Image (tube, rainbow over all chains, first blue to last red; front, side, top):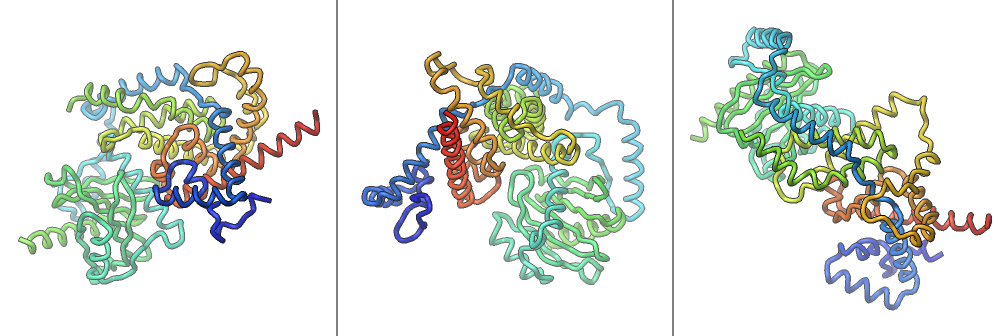
Length: 271
Length: 186
């Protein structure tokens, strides 16, 4: 059967879809055309794919959005817009939770004022969701956690620098009980980010770092708990930092203190 | 912060792609009610993260959000309901309803000629495994480039190519098998 022709032996079966869709370079397209002119098998294949493609284009419906959807989206946007500027008044219980979280963090020595993004649902909440998804994925999928395995910051940092358009600070905290396991690349908040992986008492910590447009303004840490994961977020030295783990709040706060102090020392060292 | 400006910009750049958003959700979920809910949720998510949109064509950006929202929805539905299995015959029968179609309605002649054929194609595409279905829908119905599809689905270019090839081969099989059956019956 023509469809079962092998992709090699000079045949172009594996390129036919890309050829059909105009996705090949000019040079490749010409090669495919030259081959099609002299090979009946590939020509038949090309004809089949073309027929399927136009049958779908002509035959499969493109569903139009119902008016009710258009209306509800417009209404949703109108309603959603004021949320970021007007702090919700009915969030007293959250404020109390916030005060509790703040005192907890102060108790373990996170030396900065703590705010919570629970008061401002919106972007940082979405980023927190993505941070959590990335963390969970890295633990679920085999070989996803670490791209470069090393406890040596002088191995991990150059590797990340090569992959990224920025240079994240990398420090090992083995002596303080948080050994660096390695790093990986991930995609969070619509950009490539550096992820450093640490271990503490058999718990994995992910520290995600990327440059922040608002990063010139240092932002104190804010804390959140999502489904048993503790997340800390702060900005420092032009970078956005997100630490996430299933460790308890005290441990993750202690870890954040180490990172902040090391980053501050690093910044001073450069000056 | 200029909120009404953000709303206006969102309406201008993103909302023209509402049909595409609904269409993708519809093909992924294969159910009009769920598709409407998911498309709405995705648009509101898109609005909330609109500040992260870095300009350019908003269509692939929006479709990526629709896709993720759809998969979350499917995972939830799978978990919740073993009770209501998907009935392909019922879902496919709405294919013939012209009220569901965008664009100009076909002439009566076209209608007569192509009604079964359209339903056959609809059914074959709806029955494709989801990873091939989404690639074919993004390419054939939304006209996305391979690079845009790679970004929406979050897969390498080579995988876009192989999924499209495999998807079209499966469709071809389904369409020719269907024609064979009709020939036998007729």
